[in-house]
Figure 1 (spheres, rainbow, N blue to C red):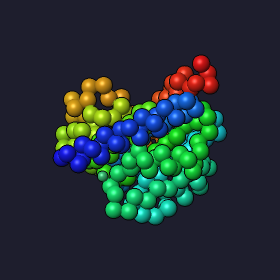
Figure 2: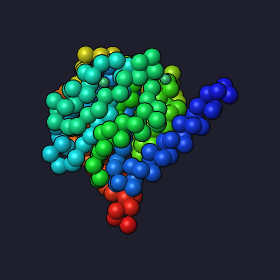
Figure 3: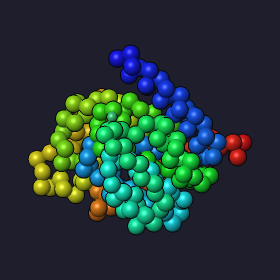
Length: 222
Ligand code: MG
Ligand code: ZN
């Protein structure tokens, strides 16, 4: 436990440095977390296609192995850098700090960070982001927020994805959202289908507000 506290303390220091650097450049950084298969990359692809023409977007992809998600994002028209964590099951602030040096996201851009698929430790590791988003899909079950409360508590936003599948499932989406809101009453909720496009307008509207907020932090504008 003592070792873990030391690791987290060090991570928090690096995260604070990342955050200061990102805000100085007016970059809106969003940390996207979910279990594997909830549709993080699909949501990012859709977001890139909708918002790419109006806002400069860069993506950091976290996975244990392969370059596949970064390739998908490049195919969606945005700059993307893949981080492979090997045995590691989360991104940490040092990895993101190094990625920033390579990717060099432009001033005033939107930086989307797709964390490693995992609902446990990504909740503990601050990356220096402006906001945390947890993505759950309707195929995962209503009790996810009760089983993994830390990540739902840490998040600013819940994206409930794959709502196009609801007619085929027993799941009660209102119950899932209710559980999430009980764990975190401040949680902002978007119900979306990344593939069909439902709810994407509201999600992108929230992202635009994040970009504006980051611009307000930028030392270039004060
Ligand atoms: Mg992915
Ligand atoms: Zn981990």
